[in-house]
Length: 338
Image (tube, rainbow, N blue to C red):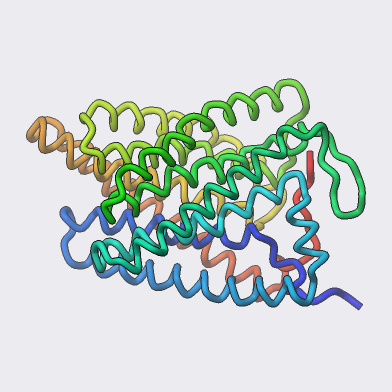
């Protein structure tokens, strides 16, 4: 008798919340260019992200009660444990959407502090595993630490850079700066470790290849945060250049990743691309404001990027629905440790 699909609802299923929330913020930033339709679409995406999060939260709690061993396996897996960060990161993005709608509110601030602290704890918990000589799973099997060095580690790191997105909008500058500094410090370290793992250990398994796109997220989010800090335009330009180059760098892996068929790992494209769209939009506004019509090309490019990213996330959503209907997603397909 096969196990119920609920058993295989891993932590990675919260990744769509990040993608939808990030896309909502991107369309919100397009409002000065596109007017009310962009604002309406932003709100619709935020509501959809909230509904998806609520459904996943209820199902995940039910899973933890019915299949506690499955959750333990996720938390002890050398790769899947880092997806725990998708929960607070998704919530932080939803809070950022709420801050756009309602402005600074005491209840939003209280929720933000709680979730930002949870994100900080998840980062500490994930990175503390680096100090261990090996990883032991729930079955007692020992895995070398190199197996856990994958681009998935960017998720808990970038979460600390996401925290200022709602934090600054709510007026909490000091905490936002301090938490962002943690992400800023560990982002290049994780990148170096992932590259060292690739050079010294092995090529990532096909199912993990889409996670390379997460490398686009840190510079993209940092650029948007720099905009909220009213940093000089050249700071955002540097962040955009790094993010765009990372996208060009990792794009070729998609051809090989498709050999594994569609799986939830492909949602790793969603939030980084949505963040790049947001950065392109705010950079376009900043360049147009400072350079007049000669810099208007970035605003035009931002519209193209936003539309393309929206198409990608729509395609991911449709393929997810089809996979659920066909029964090809909630199946025992653990991410290989490498």
